[in-house]
Image 1 (cartoon, rainbow over the protein chains, first blue to last red):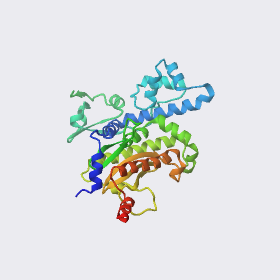
Image 2 (cartoon, rainbow over the protein chains, first blue to last red; image 1 turned 30 degrees about the vertical axis):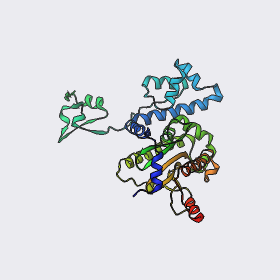
Image 3 (cartoon, each protein chain N blue to C red; image 1 turned 30 degrees about the horizontal axis):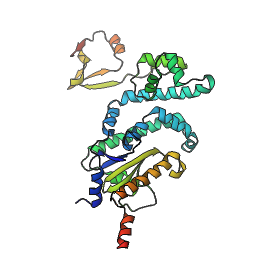
Image 4 (cartoon, chains in turn red, purple; image 1 turned 180 degrees about the horizontal axis):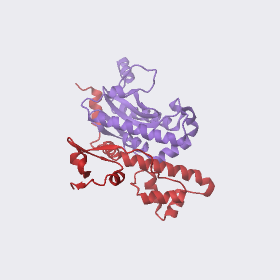
Length: 153
Length: 174
């Protein structure tokens, strides 16, 4: 049985729903690229702060140097803009820092895909109920010229 | 101010007149906003000494903690009978009894969600903050959260939701 407190409380609750759940699910679904852009934003923000007393760098100056509107820089720095490689490199060039680095020494990882999600695979990489491919496909292809691509798109 | 459901009939949050988002939505937006976090930790750099961490590490750590916290809450939101009584603790660590309208906190490292307990497993969030000082009164953000807890409790009292002390007062008057 509900207490009087609970009954009185429920009378105060708005019919409008919080936007949290929708936003939280969006953040979860987009976690990979959001994590990546978040780190880039932090790097840019720290560098602007470091350069400010030296050369007067600011978000406005960065926008001018990139020939974009300050609002676009705001969106980038808020970490919610899905950045292109070109933009990341241009910002890095203006600030004189490296924002991207490819770990060339990283070992190839095996990645498993459910059959239904597989778009492109190697013909002879079939296993029972699933198919495998690797992250560094171009290298593998060069080493295995007999492999044939199948597209199920 | 208004009260919005986060996941009914268990968790709710206040939305203040000067805000477009309720407090629960607002704090998780803030904890994933690099601009806010960079400013915050730069301003509170001195308090990071205790944690032996620099500003950049603190920002990334906050983001990681917030993601995990939010992910757990999403899971809790999907359960039939969310165990909110085990997620929230008394604001005052020394206080052991739990009663209606008691001030509560849910924490993960330095992240805090503040709430008032309405009933068993039913809570209304009043705000949240990054707590870097030992006492809430010592940090500007956490100090503001204390005022918000009081303001919200008064609002609920005015709307006939009573706390134990008020109840005791009524009993003694009669």
